[in-house]
Length: 313
Ligand code: CP
Ligand code: NVA
Image (cartoon, rainbow, N blue to C red; front, side, top):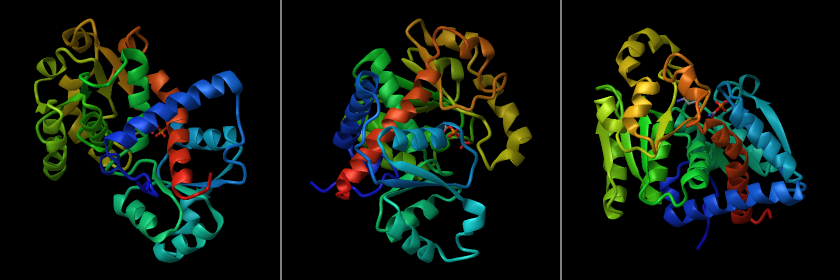
């Protein structure tokens, strides 16, 4: 079987690939702890093209390349000026001559798929307005560590049916998890995406639901997942959105409605006092910093897979 050159979204990868990535992420994590950094990526260069702010994604890709003996450089999206200073195709034709992988955080999802199509090097989606697959992989690793096999676990995403929710739904579908989106009316995942992903849940006899009553939605959850109410680039919608999302705050009441078994995570950054309270964030049930740590290991697994797919390691 030929491996895909890029990581744009999880669903097209399929179930086996997701399991392989999670297995390898766990191996990378254990190996770092027992043997320290290695040289598997010696001579390999990653460039990080970020149009939006980042802490976790940027640092973990850079540290991940470093710990594997490779090199990572930051590109200044403004000064490259894709489509302004130079066409996207010409940027791609340049970057492929120097790099081994291009990691992209963009507003436009199409920009990433086009770079992947045009550049003869692996391209990784490091978050777009549509999806955030690396985050979902880090969640998968974290959920396995805390609760074992993902199959049959229930993930309740509490918030906006946006990029993080979408990638988590893809992970859940492929891993045999139940997925519930708890959101206000009007903030569901896009209908075309639901139509695409639903059969994957049906095939595995798992639930894929959108529920507008937060207390009902979270009942029985293994994981409550939080994200900001207002994503990067949507700041102008803050006032209009916040009132809709208030009943969906992850607070002590919601956590207790979920049940004793529930753990809480969040992609971060968290807006404490908005989508999640301090008491939950700093409480015993929260595993979001484990998930942040796991970004590093999940992304190493992604890079290893893409480097193998393209004969780089
Ligand atoms: N969760 C996440 O992607 O964090 P950053 O935006 O800081 O990279
Ligand atoms: N939904 C958030 C995720 C941040 C990691 C955003 O797009 O800003």
